[in-house]
Structures are given as C-alpha cells and as structure tokens.
Image 1 (cartoon, rainbow, N blue to C red):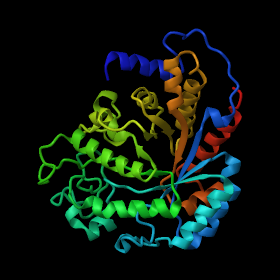
Image 2 (spheres, rainbow, N blue to C red; image 1 turned 90 degrees about the horizontal axis):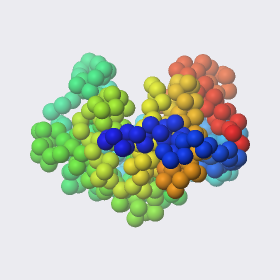
Image 3 (cartoon, helix red, strand yellow; image 1 turned 45 degrees about the horizontal axis):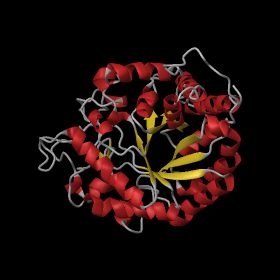
Length: 377
C-alpha cells in the first residue's frame, strides 16, 4: 500500500473526504440506504431442525432488520449432480426448499455458500470432496497431525486445500455450484476462499514454483467468470487479499503467503466480505478504494462489531462531499454478521433457552439493535 492509499485509507476510515474534511453535512437516510446489505451467516441446520430454523427466519430475522441470509451449505446437501459429496446429515432438496420458502415469506435474500479452496479437512478427517477425489489435494505429502493439534501459527497444519490448477477440478465443482444456484434461484453465491494456508505447494506438479498471487487470482477469476455466466454475483472472504505483514494482521485475518497481490489481478465486481473478529481494522475502506463492494463482517465481540458499524456508517453518511468520496462510500455496502457454530444453538441462545457461550448471539443482537437506531443520525 503506497502513501496515497494509506492517506485515503485513514481519511475514509474516519468518514472524511480529503477536500472537505471540515464541511460535514447532516443527512437523514433510511436504514435501507445507510446499510443496503444487512446480512447474517448461519450454518445449515440438521434435517430435524429445519422447522425451528424456518420459524427463526420468518419470526425473528425481519424484526431484527436482517435482509440477507447466507447459508453455509458446504457439503450438507444431497447433491443430485454429485451424490458422493453429500456429508453427514445433509439436507434434502425438499428441506432446502422449505428454507427458501421461509426466506421468500420474510422478504430475505438467500445466498448459498461453499468452501471452494481451503477448509477441505476438519481436524484429521477429509471432507467429501478430497475424500472422493484425492487427486485434487494440493499437498498430498502434508497432512493433519495425528493426534490432532490445532494450529497456532501458519507454520502449523490448519486444513487441506484444493489444487486450483488441477485440470479436472472444475468438472466436479461447477455442476455442484450450478445445482445450488438453480435449486435456490440464487442471484449471488459465496465461494469462501478464506484462510488458504496451502497454495502453490512446492511439491505440487502443477503449482510448485509459481507465483501464489497469480495462482489465487486465476482461480478467483475462473470462479467469478463461471458465476457471471449464471447471472450470479460472487461473494468471497477478504483475508487472502490483505498483506498480513504490512498490516500486522498476520496469518488468520490476512495473508502471510503472498497471495495479497491478487487484489489487483481479479475482477472488481466481487462482493468482499471483510471479516475482522479481534478489532475494527479499517480494511473495508481499503477494498472500497481498490474498487470493490465490501461488507464489514464481525462475529462474537460486540465492541468490535459496533466499531465496524460506526466506521461504515461514518463513511456512507459523509460520502456526499465529492464524486470520489461518494463512489467510495457507495461501495461500503453494509454489515455481515457471522456465526460459526450450530444454528440450533444460536437460535436457542437467541431465545434465552441456553447460554450464549462465545458471545455471538449478544453481538448479533447489539449490532442489529444499533443499526435500527441509526435512521436519521
């Protein structure tokens, strides 16, 4: 990031335009304009919990102000195109359609999500894609430790990745993507792409020795182009596009393996979901400056979520001062609350029927309550 980008980055994070920093004007904007996207990420429920899940969609989400539901489907669906990829407790088409009907009733946009690069293993177990197609493994010689030991740094093993340059990979994943788009009538698709610690493995006969940013960018572009042909907007996580060394965000929330330069090599019409769970780093402004639409995405720390909300609000509110700042502010599309546990636990905790063990429900409630109060501020 050069000095000009850094200056703009800091100014925009403060909600200020470089030329008109002292000329603030008050605007009264409805929440729908202040935060066009008010999204929630939930995990796919077990089949027996679908009725509870649908009730939560229709009875709770509109009241909270959620207008977009991203469902972390991954392999929890009974695919007709690739039945072998259905994981444990996978939903039937009928059950997924019940969720879709609930979203339609509630006026909520539905977006399916799959992890399409990293996160192909959990602890020592391979997930269905690599279990059935081991030839897609980017690093056959690098495997989870047994017994399992969670990663503390990027030098530890975290999770398996697909080989983005395997010539047969798209023959398997494109039909699965297309099936979900068609079943869901989706206008957007979340492809994951976060926390990819294994890419360009030196022992991979296709990727070894190549530029990791170029490998990542080519793969992102291939997914984007396919989704565009299907009339779908692509959503992805932000972390592989941030330099973990320069920002000191390190390996989890950013890239320490040089994929960050891909930010200048990929299409700009991608929705960047900028997850930050430890603090409200002003990285959403960075993506907006770079030309992307972006969502700030907190999780289980209410103070972080509220700080991110204030950052987005300030930039959008003050974006009328110049054509440049208006363009940047319009790219700050809103908020995306993320949860990573079981949806049943989230729903029960929301209703006070069990403990909110990690604070995710508390953050969700506080975040969306604050969004509802911001009209006219």
